[in-house]
Length: 233
Image (tube, rainbow, N blue to C red; front, side):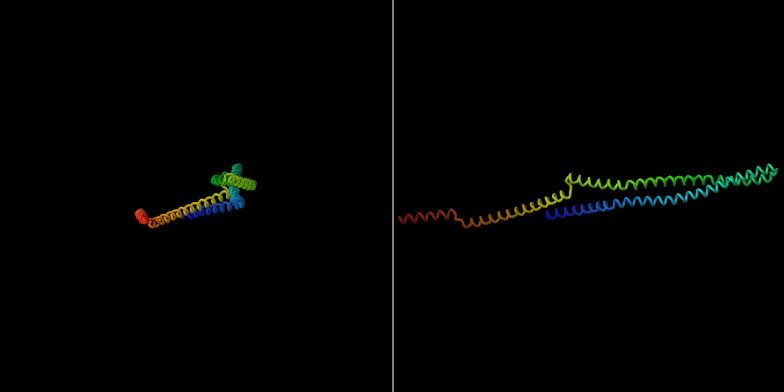
């Protein structure tokens, strides 16, 4: 059982090792593709940002145009009011000033909206420029990153070989473990054979003891021999 337990334990480690190795291989194979996909994603984000920025700029331009229109109208009604005063038409000047007041109200109400639209447009343009810079850096550095990764992998393999953790070293370790397990099983088998041999020898000795002559038998035989000798004499 010990042999098979060691075998299955090592088998589990081998399977885990192969799975990890497979994942490393997948990661190595997809590194360059993943890097290029990252750059494509950044470009896609830039495209979305460009569209959003264009909409924000368009909105700001519309608001700014409307704002400037009310400013011009306010100035125009002011000039008309002054012209009416010069002509002695105060009633007409008051009407012009009333129109100017409405334009001023529109200018004041639009001021915060126009400022917010301008800030949003400027921030989007700044973000767009930053993203363009990052994409340019990523594209320039992509080949460098791939070369650095390949160099790091080669260095890792060299370090593993020098540290004795290569696949060959692991194979020798596994073979040594198999040899130790087999030797242990052989020693156990020899021990059981020795025990069985010792038991059979004891049994044989007991039977031989049954057949061996006793001292009483030898003494009786000696007396008979002596008596027989005396009669002859």
